Image (cartoon, rainbow, N blue to C red; front, side, top):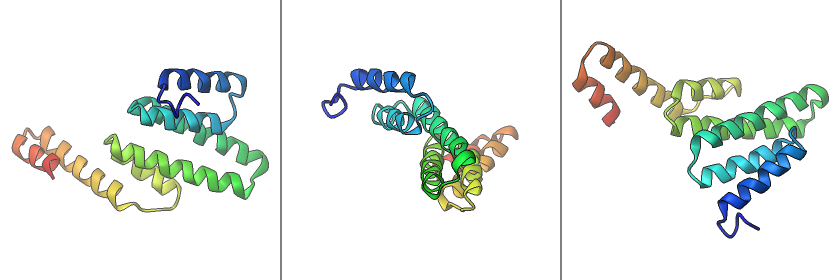
Length: 134
């Protein structure tokens, strides 16, 4: 197994091949997400988990199975957590809202980011820095 041997480039190639054969299989995109996260390629990881979520949501439309719904919710929580880690806090809050959940980390992050942005727009540099320092 290339991933276990930390041969990330090989593993990525295998996952991409799997995706080319089964492009609508959300599990393949989720596996690629995990690989990109381990590689610290967070932008790619976000794209992968987003695709996995979208594919599961589409499959729910047809089957509406409880298993798919639970998996979709799991993937969306993972996506929201990654969004917080990337500093995309408003997007994370929206993702949690779509799950009818409130996440304190995402909410606090969004508040601090908005306060810092407001200070920055008013050229209040010390306040902007102070908000990001918290």
